[in-house]
Image 1: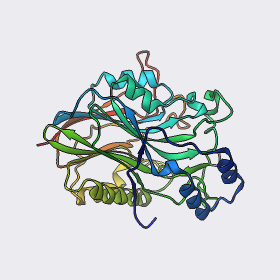
Image 2: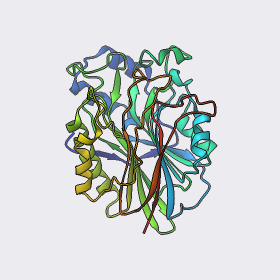
Image 3: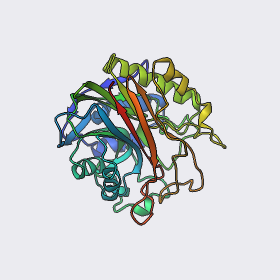
Amino acid sequence: MSGPAIHTRTVATLPLVDDALKQSILSGPRTVEAHREHMASIEAMGMVETGGTGSADRISPDFTIAAWNIERGLFPEKSAGLLGRHNPDVILLSELDCGMARTAQRHPAAEIAGALAMHYAYGVEFFELGLGGETERPYCIDDHNEAGWHGNAVLSRAAPHRVALIRLDDAGHWFASSDLSVDATQPRIGGRMAIAAILPTAAGKVCVVSTHLESNAGSARRAGQMEALLEAVESFAPDMPVIIGGDLNTGNDADQPDWSREELFDLARARGYSWDNNAEGMTTRRSYLTPHPTRTMKLDWFAARGLSLDGAEIVPAVDSEGEPLSDHELIVGHFAIP
């Protein structure tokens, strides 16, 4: 990619990939060039699905925002319950399935939005060609995916004025056979991305961004994705207060993960973003699906520009019985337009 691609077309339902195209992808070469052709042939890669019904015309200028890598969305009702207890005005979600056998062919973004009386904007990070990793297959209810989508979402009490899908990578890191680090159990078309939404408040507009950076790469790759994201956000929402939140996979490639060595923090600071509204502590945990149950890392963050920073917390991602809902904790932040 010569630069980040920004897609603003919205639809009520993302169009599916037909069987003929899927079989053509599966039987064809696993190269970067082929991957880019496949990306261009899948309409949903350039669209944002929007839906839901919110409970407000605009959000308060001092608002609460939650960010959560929901690890596929295996438990939509319980996840909505945990989120609802913190009364967020905005929710930034990543690793959300839609029409995947491992999550019962459900649409967790739409279901959580419905449970919390929120609007949603959902975009595709990956079109999944298989049923998932080894730990996920026991949860599959079918031998096929009805849609095969995996992506990010923004949920909000107020309807967004504008939304965008921002593509950060089209090289086929999880598909191309020339990439020796590819996990062969998860063949996918797509790449890391973000969903951005411009929301109305009583004190003006604010841009919120749900993103997910690459886990299967080093700091330099993530820094490049962050640079592309910041450039795209500036184009989409120039001179506007911004919150970027999500799983940045900081240090995730190292044998002894160390988030503090990541280059992306200084890149964002140089563009006026602050990382000061993040609680201390690790943000991963044991879950039913994680292949790394004992590893603890700090992967999830808020970066803010042009906003007052009013505190943050890390919330254990467990249900009322103490059972895990994801391999990432929920992070909650409080912000205000000054």
